[in-house]
Image (cartoon, rainbow, N blue to C red; front, top):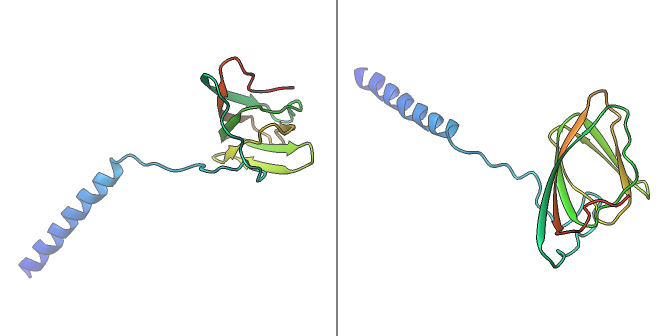
Length: 137
């Protein structure tokens, strides 16, 4: 009986170390990995020139609709809070909630609107070229 108790205690001790190691290990979650934008369009090849990365935090209050615009560069983002609806000029629609990622359409006119009751906050990464606009209105 004593050996059984020692065995159980030893097993619990080892399993608690495994759990502790897991809690102290970095976790990586792939939010997006694709060659397509959210509407199914193929992303274009990267432009030639000096690369320029732009990272924007965009806050859209409830009830606000952004102006119609398009991006000449590949970009992707993560909605940090709130809700956001993206609509293309041909009425393709994507509804995002907090935690969702988006690979944005390129060279397609679209707008975003916050139909929720909380500010939508999105972090967007643009893979552009030096002196090239990231958005055209």
